[in-house]
Each structure stands twice: as C-alpha cells, then as structure tokens.
Image 1 (cartoon, helix red, strand yellow):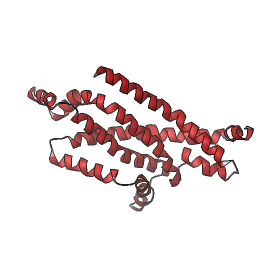
Image 2: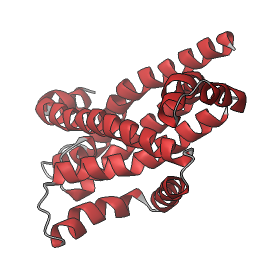
Image 3: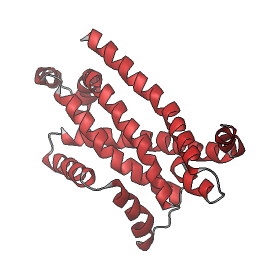
Length: 218
C-alpha cells in the first residue's frame, strides 16, 4: 500500500503537470468549440441555403471522421502546407474543430424544440434573423440544450487523452512517461483514473442537478 501511495507522492509534479495541461486543453477548447458550434448551429437553421449547406457539410464530415485523424491532420499535414504550429496549439485546434460539430447538433436540436410560432411572432415585429435567434429562440432552447451540452464536454474532456499520442504531455501521457522510470504501471493508471473522476464527477452532478431543475420548470 505504501508503494501505491508513493507512486503519487514521488511523482506529484508530473501528475500535476499532466492534469494541468488536460484542464487547459479542456477549458480553452471548450470555449472555442462552444463559440464555433453555436455559430455552426445558427448556420444550420439559417434561412440562407448556402449557410445551411456549409453547416451540414461541416457536421457530416467532422462527425464521421475519427478524432485521431483530425489530430494527425493538424500535427502532420498542416505543417506540410507551410503553417508552423506547435503540438499544444494543434491539439487545441483539433479538439475545438471536432467538438464544435457536436455542439452544433446540440444547438440545432435545442432550437428545434422551440415552437415555430415564437420565431414567426418575432419576425412579425420586424426582428431580423440574428435578433430572433439571439433574443427569442436561443434563450428558450437553452433548457433543452444544457444537459446534452454537458455530455458533449464530458466526452471532450476524456478525448483530451488522445493528445498524448501526438507529443502533448497531458494526463494521457503520464503512464508511458512514468513507466520508463520504472514506476508501477497499474498504480499509475489507478491514480489517473481517480484524477479524471475528480474532474468528471462534479460535471456529471452538475448535469443531473440542471436536468432536475429544468424538469421542475417545465
């Protein structure tokens, strides 16, 4: 048991550095994908055919592409196009681009729960598409979007471990790094699992709490 705890205490700096990078990836990519996904969602419900086509093409292309390939494209293909980008920014872009497609679908689904009469009444008052979406539709759609949106971000948090395969030292890279130093691999994996639970469980509890509140409101 002493050896089990020693794996954590003797390598605390590496665990902190790895999970610190994971949290940074999660927060930055989360904000970027939320903004990008919301814009894509607006395109999916736009009255302009070209925007709807672009949004649908993006979602269908990205959702049907493995995240590992998105990472590989950013890390290996983009530099060959003459764009110099480090591993961490590449991971951020890959996570953001990929997750934005799922955020878009959550937004689109939420918008579709709002009765058409709401948007028609707003347009009758002279509001443009942006005003109708921002002031009338999205505030009402938010109730239906919250729970699935949290699920998307929980999935993204777990997806950050893929960055370890592309030279980013985050939580997913800790086992390989410490095994090279002779540490007990099983103990390392257990501590990493505990670390992810510490981060994910509060998000899951938040999701459950918000679902219960919204159920009462409805």
